[in-house]
Image 1 (cartoon, rainbow, N blue to C red):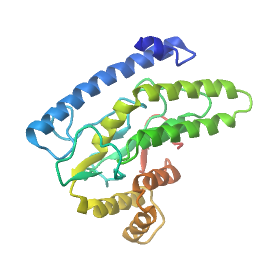
Image 2: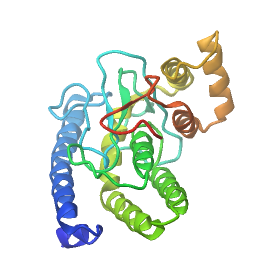
Image 3: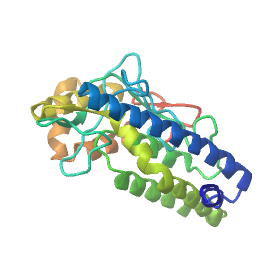
Length: 269
């Protein structure tokens, strides 16, 4: 049933089957990692994200249907936050703590459409939507409904601008959207575990200030005072820090700055 549903999503069945096999393997690995993380949290009471081995920070790099956010050896944290009221990522915080942007150092990574190592090289320009989707999953506090809506809206705009292959573009867009609808929830949870960590609520403003400061620096914005600019962005977010952060990444990310690392894909977003 799984492969029947999966291969029907693409007009090229062999390619679809290969993609589905890669995604299925990734789901299996992520499920095992998530269970191990949950067990480690329960036994150790750790308040920080755990890696697949129960120690450190995970590196979910399965490809387009994950968050494409990988830990970097150096650099500022460029992240978002978890809005109050939405369901927490897999794993719960201890009493008195909430999910906030992680203090660990990492960077956003995007690699276009398809699982890592099996990119789908489409001809319509949908890769920029896949890059945007990658980034969305990797920002702490974004919800899967927000990310899928952004994904569909972007692909709709791209296909609407196709003069001669509009229907083919829409078929490909439906294939990509169908894959993320089937597999996105699990990957989103894993991504949020990497992007977020439990912290006292009083750290919220400070963590967001650092997140926006990292964004300003990574985007190489032409400002004289990065901390003042970060404060301005934080105040302007008015409680929608994660979405504001996402919008700024989409606006400023390009090949000339370090805001997003584009892996084997055109630096479009």
